[in-house]
Image (cartoon, rainbow, N blue to C red):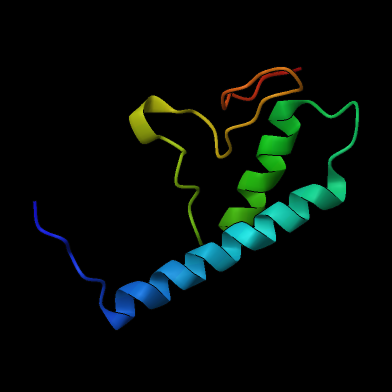
Length: 84
């Protein structure tokens, strides 16, 4: 298996995408509170990412229906957002 080296353009794209992810995490931290459902959180994150001209990487990947992998409390693995 060959190691593919990233071009300068590739790296610029990765930096831009990571900047949006960091902003989305900061945005989520600003509004998350008890009582919001995971679906509400997911919708806000999805809207934020698309407002930046980007597309959530998880959405549609292997049939994943949401923009974010979210879970509550004792759930250890990433989950599919629901009404909880």
